[in-house]
Image 1: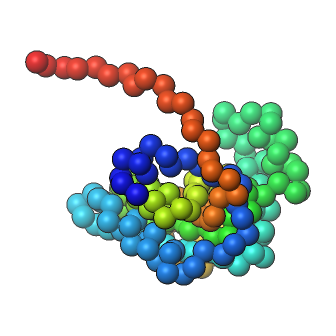
Image 2: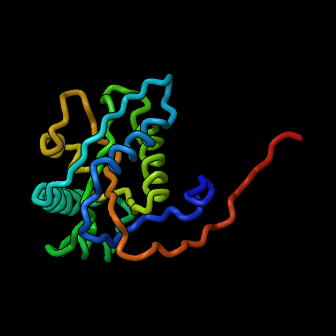
Length: 186
């Protein structure tokens, strides 16, 4: 797949087949992720791959409770209702969660990990996999129990929780708004 095709067809996937993703594919996605630029070429990222279904279920339950106890602004009533449903899986049945983490004291941790995450999601699209950034998991994973569940070493902070797997169906195209552009200069 050409880069332009991946850029224009990558969408957040929220329905996955239970088929596991081969380790070689996951390693390929991570290899694509580490090709991202980073501030001062620090390359501060690390990757935690969670494929254990019981651990994914535990993270899901804890993350939902965390968000419900500390709801961020902008959550709709529908989001809150879904989070209260014990059957709602924030990982949408994906067989793998890949968490991009950073050195905690890195001033550019979020930017660096986000660049790596975007590379990973584009590579997933190019190989026929779906992906989605799971914002509902961010708060709990950044807590001490969350970092312990990920077995993160001291001094590491999770930034980007991404699910990866085989989509049940092709992701629908999402219309894009025209960009707001201001030209300065000639």
